[in-house]
Length: 233
Image (cartoon, rainbow, N blue to C red):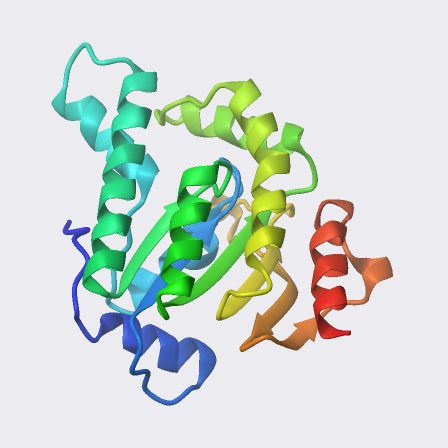
């Protein structure tokens, strides 16, 4: 699987199918964001790959690094995967290439790089996925570990749960497009119940496209909705 940024038409196909817009002229960074366990890959990653495109998935990179380096710790593999994603994002920005990546958005480095991309006239489109509580994120990561996946420290998940939303609010005024989803409803593929994410808000070109009523908004997403409402006024 290649995760090198390219000038391929795949990302343009995604844009046309997902947002029904005319062909772009500017490069675009696509961001699948959310704290570990949110289900970013299920919500948006599948759409990317069904459209024939690919994206940098740090969980997959961690698994690949662990498999190829016997004796390396999970923490070391997580760090190596993060640095790989950072390097690819920096390259895409410098070369003005289309690129898609998954990130927790829980730190300052990736947020700053996205700000840099926006300042350089590169489009940034974010799909942000959240759950009702950090405990649910932790439970889903544990379920992934039980299926053979790698673990994430609980304290990291709790820290990212808050910081990712703070960073998203910081980015919100300038991003080209933002979709926020609640993915708290439990899926059961064996029973034929796929993930059923609920769209909380959709903002594009600095205008509100769609938003659920604030009283119906899950508590975790209310700060995001309030921030979006303030931008409309």
